[in-house]
Image (cartoon, rainbow, N blue to C red; front, side, top):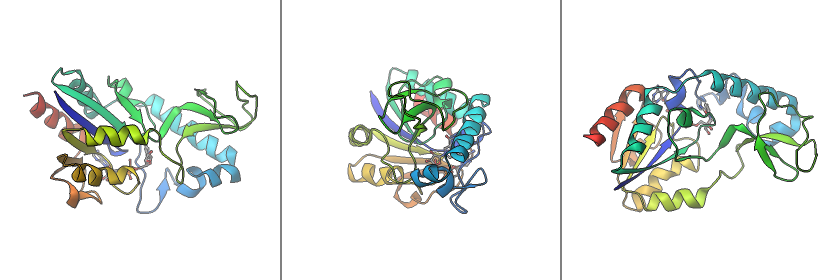
Length: 229
Ligand code: NAD
């Protein structure tokens, strides 16, 4: 049984029509990251932040999984492979592509979080700053998204899986956002072979044992076919 940990980023959903975050100019869908993806931005303008994530949620709901998402689900279904997808994406295209073992380290557009009592519940289609927490009634509702400066979810579990893996694969991620960008180094230090599948060489390219560059919808199904013989 080959244990494979797969890190995915915005690039795997790009061909489903969901735009990536452009590290070069720090903009995400024409917004400054500081304004829409930090706790300070939320305090400054909660209306704007909710509007931003309501739009991302609507776009993710309208999008469909592409051949890369579907190929990873096929790999997971194979009895010879134990696959864990660690995604930085906040969309649900892995799940809708058929993957079951998916860990959302940066949270999800489909969750709501009370920043007063930390209760979590399924996000309605449209959230607003005046929504009350179903548990404590505080008007402190935020999207269940890990913002810059906050600790990503389930890190111990991820590091444990990385160290125990037979292969680490990174798909569609620029290698600029930590701690995910450090997984290749963690795998390398644990003696785990590493593979990058990305449109272009990522910031961490030199650390990968092997790298293939091109669109995920082509590279990922190709690689999965090789694995499945
Ligand atoms: P990123 O936007 O920084 O990098 C995306 C990478 O994907 C780039 O290296 C790019 O060359 C590559 N890429 C673009 N199109 C591709 C394709 N068709 N096939 C293969 N690779 C392709 O993304 P990141 O590293 O994931 O970091 C962005 C942060 O922003 C994450 O924390 C994430 O939570 C958030 N984000 C999420 C989504 C989403 O959920 N779909 C979308 C945008 C941003």
